[in-house]
Image (tube, rainbow, N blue to C red; front, side, top):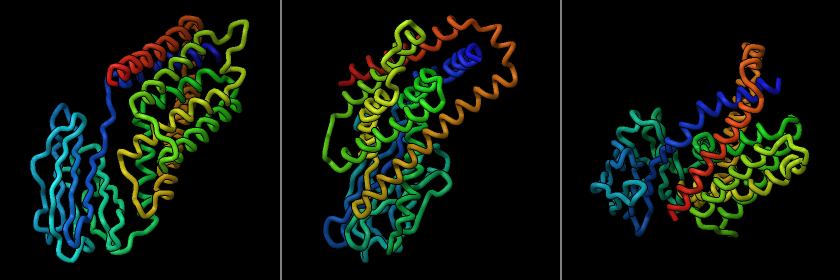
Length: 336
């Protein structure tokens, strides 16, 4: 069983890591329509970058606004942005906002707009729902429906966070200790997400991302020496290690949430929904890894166990994790 587990790890790493190294998660689009005076609104439109060009989508405001579309966007180094002023007699309520071209894309657009009270409200548009009517009275369900899927998508597209969890799965053999370690990781990043979102603690994004890569390198080194005469720190105190690094990863989640933006009227519910989405995505990933491993053992266990020596399989897996995390660390340091 141990040989099968190790060989399965190699298969997963061989399929997973090339995507991790060479792919980048596509950021969602972002549209903000903010009241500045009376019926005048300032519009900020951020298109995702696709191969150094703006994504082929366009934001259209309600038809009673005097400028429903904006100027050509300009690159800010990460995305394509445009800003303009528009006048919407009677306010935004009852008007339609649409993202043309979104149905042909594989990303979402988060829309923040000023409600009748002037507070910013939030709506998430997807390829299957490209427009909406601005309601007069928003509901809590709208906030949950917008931010929970964003949390799921963020963790499933956050390859560094997933690789950290994957390394924990390989490192901790006992299932209950694994559950405890992942729970500690969850509690920790929930704490730092909250304190960072409310502005109690703030850390710059680039160093946080670099140290997240370093945390995966640490787990790779623990995996390399696993099984020696002396138990490694992560083997003796898996919950402490995962909790400590979870605090760090939480700042990464908080940075992504700041880029997305939060509704002024319901920040706690948006934060809770996003965090629940992250946990759902994380549990889906763990369940998928364990299920695939069980299926492979069931279907081809004896054959693969004979074909894959323990030392070779383990070494390949560990070096794959270490190489990718080192690549991320160097890449992120160079981006300071």
